[in-house]
Structure formats: C-alpha cells, structure tokens
Image (spheres, rainbow, N blue to C red):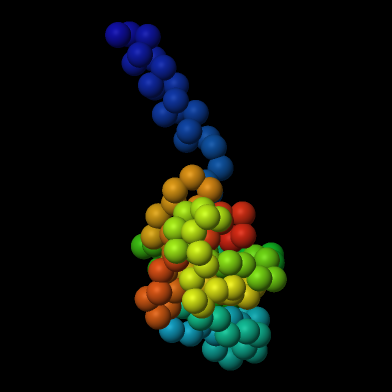
Length: 150
C-alpha cells in the first residue's frame, strides 16, 4: 500500500513540472469565419473558411486565438467563431473519396469526391476510418490518413 502511495505521489509531483500543452484543438462552429492577419477586425482578412474547419490553437490574446491550419499556415480567429466541444477534420489531399461505410468495399456517396480543405465534424472513429458530417448534415466515412483531425 505504501509503495502505491509513493508511486502516486511521484507521478503527481513529476506532472507538475511538465510543460503545459498550449496547442488545443478548435473547430469553426459558425457557417463562415474570417481568418485575419492579426488579433482584431482592423487587420486584413486573409481567408474565409466554413463550418467545421479545424485549427490548432497556438496562443490566446484577449478574444482572439492565433491558430494554425492543415498546411501549417498561421492566422487569427475570434473566439466566438470556434468551439472545443467536438472534433473536426479537413481533407488534406487534393481529392478524397467519402464512402457509405468504413471500408473501400462500400460505395462512394453521391457527393464524393471532395476537394482539399473540405471540412467536416468528426462523429466517431472505427479503426482507420472516420465517420463525419458536413455542414449540411450529410454523413459519410473517410479514410483517416486523408484528413487532418483536430
């Protein structure tokens, strides 16, 4: 019993000295979101993305997040546009097939293939397959290596 207590204390103590993970996952929750050059609406709009676009949070400054996208590009995004309540995925290849089931034996869905940057909400994972939903509510499966998940 004493050994377990010592081990538990050691784990707790050592974790206090580990660096905090500052790269949190963020998903766009609104229909559209403007990505900016700096933390404010006075900064240039560089790109506009759609619902479920995933980002990695790098920094927070007031109401703004400095974020990184699937390509490693860095932007600023207002906090009211994003959520941490669910995971999102973006296609990272030029084209990707979406299927009716988790495997290549399942047919592609009518709206497949999709282009790079197509964004989706992650519903669940099964092995190397991801069950996703797009912004209009359509659901399909996609092979995990074809998407960037945050």
